Structure formats: structure tokens, C-alpha cells
Length: 205
Image 1 (cartoon, rainbow, N blue to C red):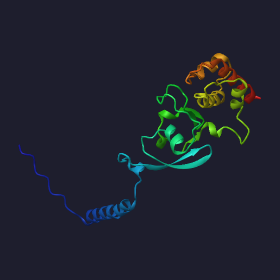
Image 2 (image 1 turned 120 degrees about the vertical axis):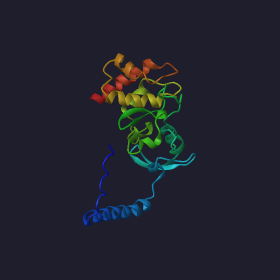
Image 3 (image 1 turned 135 degrees about the vertical axis):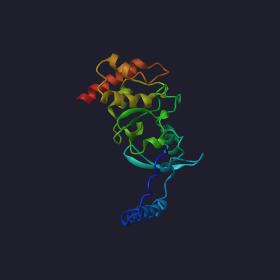
Image 4 (image 1 turned 180 degrees about the vertical axis):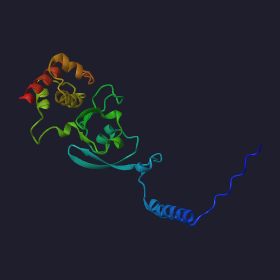
């Protein structure tokens, strides 16, 4: 049996007015969207080789830098901002030489993109000292001769600062465990552990 045909929907004055209001609202919104000029980052589409201007808060200062989306935080710090205290070791996140603090936490800067760190508080080894006064960890590394070639030292120092803040410097075994992400090709581990333990005692005073 054929389905009975439905009567055509009658247009009333109310439905016509509602339809007109919706259309007018949509039309009024379009120019506002068209006037907004999205940045390369907000568009989410950046052409190959195109740079975006970002602001990084490094060692208490806002620094404006133009980077391609593929640029790591490590390269932005070293090549764009001239902060060469952060070292490039393996460039694969294995050695820890590039360790910096991001919002107080240890981060291997070769494994994070600069554009992802806008709005974060970044601290490099250059930002530890208070004027001419070294950070307690830096002083302890000097006292205990906790470096040889120096390639890994800045990363070791930054990781040690975080290790102490995290409360993981109670014993030598604990220090070794929580500093295990930082490698020393000169095998100066005994002196590094002693320096971290010494600095931890000084910080706790």
C-alpha cells in the first residue's frame, strides 16, 4: 500500500522571520571572520621553509625569535638566541647534555620543538647564577672537580638542580638513579654524585 503523501509544510509569518534572522546573523559574522588575519601558527599550516615568530621566556626574559616549526628548542636556544651553554650531544635524547628546565622540570631540549614551549618558563645554565654568585650546584661541581671535558657538564648541572628540588638526593644510590638520564663520557660519575649530595645538603640548610 503506497505511503500517504505528507502535506507540504506551510510557511507562516513566524517561520519566515526566524529564517531571515538566522541568515542575517550568519552574513553579519562572515566579514568579521574574513577581517581576522590568522598567523601561520594559528592556521596550523605553515609552508615548507616558512618561519613563525614566537616568544620564549628564557632566564626571566621574553625573547622574540623566528623559527620554522621543525626547529627544536635546543637549536632555538643555541643558534637563534646565542645561549650556547646548552650543549648538543647525541641530538637523540640519549645523553642529556641538552637538559634545561621548563616550568621547573627537566626537559631534553633536543626532543621538544621551540613552538611548543611558548608560555613556558625556560631556564638554561646561563640563568642559574645570581650575578657573580654561582648556584650551589655549580659551586659544588667546582669543589668536587665533577667534570673533565665539560661537554656534559651543563646538562648534568641542570639535571642536578631539578633532582635536588624533586627531593631525590637523599642517598648516593638515589642520586645515581635519578641522574641516570645524563651520561658522562669521561666517567666522572663518582665526583658528580658527590657534588650533587654536597649541594643538596647546602640547599637544605
